Amino acid sequence: MTADCLFCRIVAGDVPSPRVAESERSIAIRDINPAAPVHVLVVPKRHEPDIGALARSSTEDLADVFALVGRVAEQEGIATDHRIVANTGRGAGQSVFHAHVHVLGGTELAER
Ligand code: AMP
Ligand code: ZN
Image 1 (cartoon, rainbow, N blue to C red):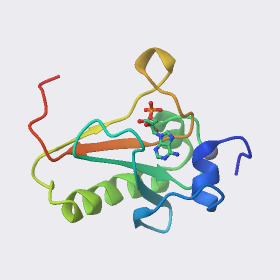
Image 2 (image 1 turned 180 degrees about the horizontal axis):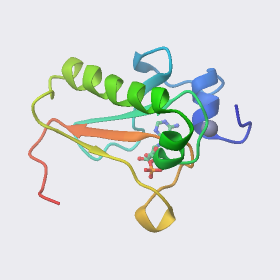
Image 3 (image 1 turned 90 degrees about the vertical axis):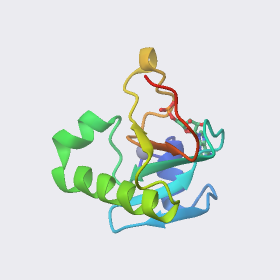
């Protein structure tokens, strides 16, 4: 747990954020500023600054994130039509430096 990390605080329950789903190693929460009708963030419980760092530190945690993405997509009714995004670095729009993936769907998503 990193005390000044928003997602560590959400994982710990210090910042309230209802969980859409949870696994042993990850949580899923709704994005506070949704970019699509369904916009869920899947967040590993372990603090790593980005998804690449998570992959390097634990393949189990990485696999767990994507397994939970699948469950969330199923639960939200977007299993066959959704997008997964992982921003790395400020230049790519990353604003929370705790690894996470965006799961977007529920509408026609523009190509790109
Ligand atoms: P990124 O820009 O890829 O780092 O994604 C961070 C995301 O976290 C943004 O889409 C924010 O809208 C979202 N966010 C920021 N604070 C919260 C919060 N307290 N609860 C849920 N989502 C949040
Ligand atoms: Zn963190």
